[in-house]
Length: 255
Ligand code: NAD
Image (cartoon, rainbow, N blue to C red; front, side):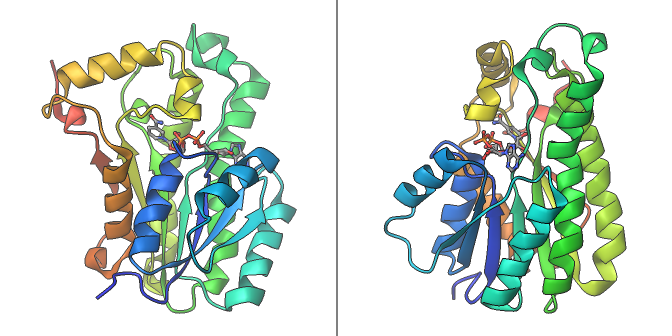
């Protein structure tokens, strides 16, 4: 039996084949989901069209999450097309690369606001508009990183944004639990993606991770995709407000 048969799922944040959102979408598609992709910019749309050439029943909708109107339009489109949705994978974050190096105290007011707007507030706004369409219950997942729990050099303002994202997951889970809408996050180990490469000394981060993690290797995006599938499916029906680490155990290490 396919775990997501007849489920309508929105995947937000595929920029290219390296995007974690793509690994998530592939797992969900194989599990029978009907996937709508929201994209940011024409370049992402072109990548998506190529990537999904062999997929059936996929649709695309443009959504820059910095405007409420765009989010509202995205869900109006989904309502018209499907009536009901069952899941959203929010895989979006952004910060200027200038902010992802040097001292945290040099974070600009504008950079702080922008990182939080795109990477945190968007989850709150997306949840607000997704909720009325989740009439059969639903699941919202987002992607976070260990730099929100502990200091990771250069991660700076994005670490603070991830801490806010982790907390938002819990508040949203509290709001929506009785409506059978679950909200969870996956804390992925470092993966070479467009967003990852924006972090200064990212290669060093990968090396340290590989050396110190109990499993002695990097995380494969497919592993994040499989955990997303678990969270999206009924297999995780009792789990909400949780941050699941898919990091080869890195977060358990003290020294
Ligand atoms: P990515 O660059 O492939 O994905 C980031 C996505 O955010 C892109 O699709 C981009 O178009 C989208 N985005 C940026 N600004 C947007 C806006 N205004 N409106 C709509 N979309 C916008 O990189 P990724 O690593 O796959 O990132 C996905 C998520 O995973 C992010 O939240 C990231 O912080 C998180 N994450 C990444 C890693 C890693 O090491 N790569 C580790 C843990 C968590």
